[in-house]
Image (tube, rainbow, N blue to C red; front, side):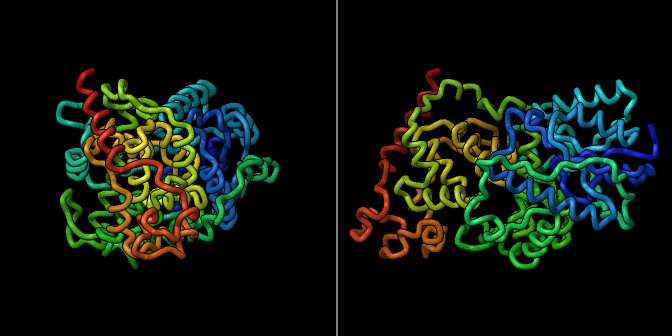
Length: 474
């Protein structure tokens, strides 16, 4: 072994800026060998979906270019993680492996086995937090129990010790990787993984660290001051578009936090107002999602609230397919589902609306929706996906009140008043009467042009309320 050589194992931290594992390896005087291993078995049961693989493929290519500009290169391998690490350790004679912690329950368990394997073979491992503001276990109630409600969690989070500062990227070139170290061609997309159409590039998304920096600069310069109101408007470009960059670690929450907190005159507070405060609270919700995932590791497949094990979810294959393809007859729902299907992304306000329609109006299990979003979103994140779907279904922590059922007509009239968003994703409605853009069944010119409503909003809402009331009998 060569104590001067270490492997830097990239996972969901595809950047050079504010990269604690890279920084620690360089501080230890190590010559770093950057490695990414595509091992779907290691990710089971939540293997990155179709859209996520598309994004990851582009992000890895971007990281490789960035590393080459620094004098290094990315070693990409496909296969089983531990044998590949063993082989690379042997060929590089590395004495240590650095990486960032993953919090998905199954991946975390496999990481524990990987650490035990490497340590038993005399390889030093160092695992750091490069994905969150704080370790999920570091914020607890006074009695040591985890939080299940966001507001007290967030107050405790803000009361804790100051966050570390962001670590700048390496200022000097990295040591070159021995040319004899083989790298596979970066290609993780299967034959059926056609990119979304229009591609995320056409929608203004650019995978990679440089794209993340541009997105943060644009948002902090153009939209953050109005974020309180603009974030609810899918017809505006008022959100940060940072979700996929965060999900793949192309930018760190620490870097985002300090960039936007610097816009505030005072430190962030839990009840602060204004766009920057509101956005930082959204970063807080991401932290809370991971807090829940770590402390309640079964929630990606099971409801946190035990009484929901008896909930009378309905099995409706035909209705589920209409929801997935955007053919429900309700424009805001259909626009959102078509945006998801064709671009790999969906506006957050519309995510809540489409989720509510599935679980409340159609009565279909939140798990069906969570699995579909996981496959179709290029910002799919297990903690956020689980929190969001259980929140909407009412079966998780800090759940939405059971009587909250989003009305797609009212939501459309309020947040897409001119129908710009609807027309973008449902072109067949473009020639309809503006007055009926969110109620096309009232427009005679739309007969046989657009699908009819698949249900009554009033009746389906009442059925949902009755189903929720039935929980009290179990």
